[in-house]
Image (cartoon, rainbow, N blue to C red; front, side, top):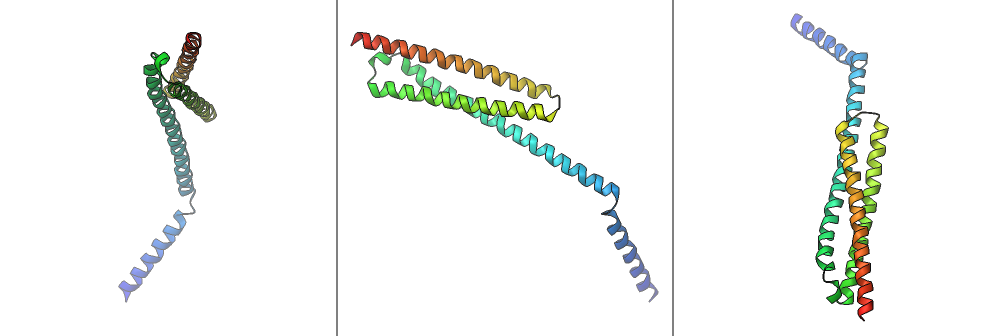
Length: 157
């Protein structure tokens, strides 16, 4: 009987201690820290997702660009539908560039809003902006070349 009372008393003390832990300031602080870390992790995941989407966009641009570059050299001998296909591909590149520009702006806003100094992320954003500028210049060059070739084609006809 004494052992039973002792076990019962120990169980009561254990239950009381456990119920007090959830109300303690230390426990509440740990919960707040955990929630804060989860928020930071979500923002980090979102940033990585944006970076991956931008990189995928640039990869798509490179693929379409390669196709256009191989076709543009011999455009005079191509049928009209191939020429229209090239114009469509250039428009596709422009659309991807616009999406990437929006995503980079979103990434910049997120970075500025975070208030943190992250040299690596700042460098990545700068590199992406520079690549965007190069791609826009390349597309403008392609369009100029295509329009010159179209003029030459019209003169030959």
